[in-house]
Length: 65
Image (cartoon, rainbow, N blue to C red; front, top):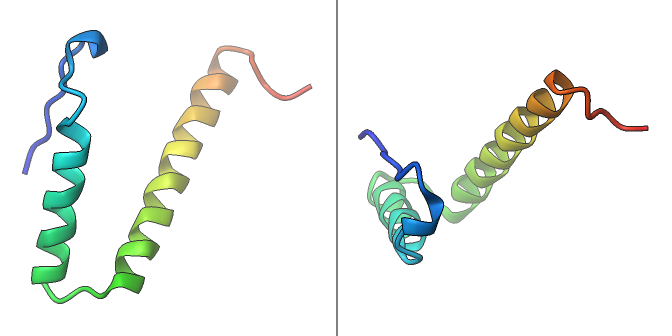
């Protein structure tokens, strides 16, 4: 499944992420994952996002003081 996003966030449907999240959750549960697996996945996603943000910040010289 490929996710596409509108390059202009002001044009994004505010319900879009909620709809995507619900679809992913249903797919995971239908695939046999339990709530604890979904929570672990959410944690991994947050970790990846945090790493990406840190990398971009470091690339632009905005590290911690």
